[in-house]
Length: 204
Image 1 (cartoon, rainbow, N blue to C red):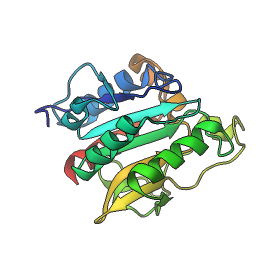
Image 2: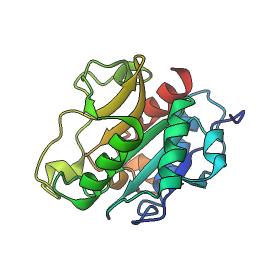
Image 3: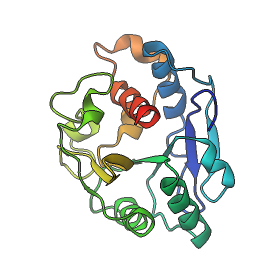
Image 4: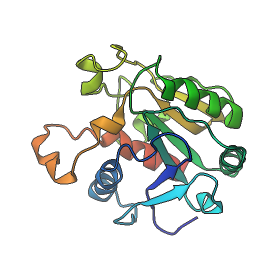
């Protein structure tokens, strides 16, 4: 593991892994702004099949299009999770009928096991900022973009009481996809859950 937190975006061979290019800088800014965690000012892109995956305690995966992992990618992901890594997956469509959701959840099941509903009382929601009602609703959900659902829960693969895969249908990739300087226009910083995810991954 690296000595400072490095935000790592997963590159996979299928689909559009780079659909949310502004998210890393925004979450890096939030971690630096709110916590005392040493954080690299720039993120990295790490191929899912690369041995370098093991260097990062948390990796982020998103996209719009179908995700079909190669055997090498699936083995690498399984090994990464077995060795204590955490994968955060966000559906950039927030669409339970979409091909990203259908294919990536199948790939998660094959590599890590079935996703289950994460209770809104889970320690993830109080590990730094407090979210008494669970995952914050996104503007994409409220405006009816995608599946016209407000997803009340995140999903997860949990092992030994610890989240190893966190899955979101809420499209945080769109919600957090802006330049960090634009935070000044928000009454409440909407990247705060991202800080909780980072802190949880580093401390659990």
